[in-house]
Image (cartoon, rainbow, N blue to C red):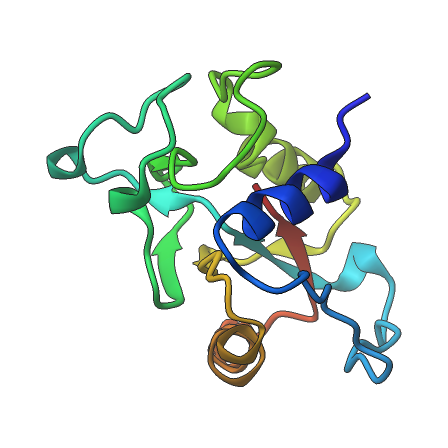
Length: 163
């Protein structure tokens, strides 16, 4: 068993931060979809970063690479499937390598779901949301920008695949 919460608390404590306060949202602005998924347009939201070779190793099994972090919401077409990586996040590198991009960027499976009638339509762009450690920036900036893109793309529902 991986004790993620305790490991996170210990990590921030050793850096001198006060005990971490986990995000809590009593009034989450989610709502029931207005129509069935098979009639809805879905947009994929990811925390994966665009690959930038000049920023060092970002491939499968790469060590944590803070240089590869991004700090603003972005969009990119899903066709062709974009080259996105996750070396900028603190995932469990002992038990996984991130060698299969489909594990964090399921574009092919979502296209299959669209072709099979499970979802009505897949948006032609995905939305990338940064993994900033600031709850305030996430709520006041990133969530607002992501919602604006959802609306621009005409999405009825969004699927967040965090890394």
